[in-house]
Length: 333
Image (cartoon, rainbow, N blue to C red; front, top):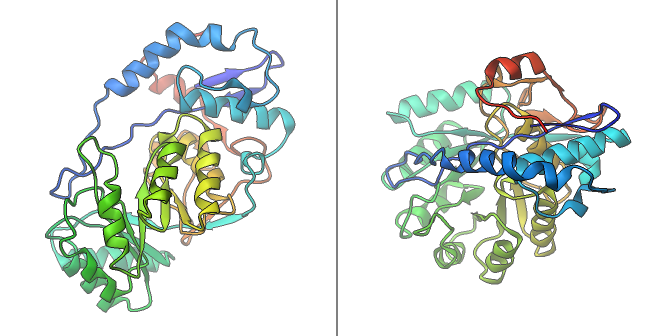
């Protein structure tokens, strides 16, 4: 989404397709496109009266706007550009660079998994996150740990587990974090199982939730000691910042993740990851740079992600010609 003020200053936002939790066999289920279709229809019908002629000094004043995170991000980008400040600083970020993790899906063999890890280690990554599911957890972790005794290694269950299973055994391999192992019937985190696992392992158990209220509930349930914060799943950056603040207040670690799409949402994730409470490596390594519409592309170099601080807003130029070529629908108000 492109948002332009009366002086010609532009802000950009993006709504991304977020994959649903795993379906139990290690393959993430595909979220229906109906979610984005509905958001598009809502923006066409309601965005103009929500923004045109409305005086606001800060994006927080807009509250809930039609179009959700895409419109909110465009407003934050525009506001930051108008004031000449990077989005990271506008949100309260303090970091100039981030340690990146690379997330690796299950392979056909242990040898293929170790070889893939080797490629990323040689590219400079010092932290790797392995996707796991029942039947593919202890063995791949053991194989990678034997090959790389000093590698910082985390695992991501993608909500594929319904019982503890072999998860407590991962503690023997110095796993730094066990991310979102348990999903509920509606795709929500099973906080009771998360708390049970955290009570049995020294590794950090990370919960993924998508609202400030859900963070409060997870902290109260002692459902882990870390929050997987995915900005694109919140309705606003204000809510993302509040979720960060609540987790940090509870002395939880935070990892920022997500932002598939064309690069805009990932740039926002980088800005969020610069917040002081985001103490764990961040996941901003996909999709491939060829899919991005921003310059410079968002991603890691040598396992490190630079936080753009020399340009205002998101800190990236948008290839508007490519946006027009890729667009299948558009509207203007």
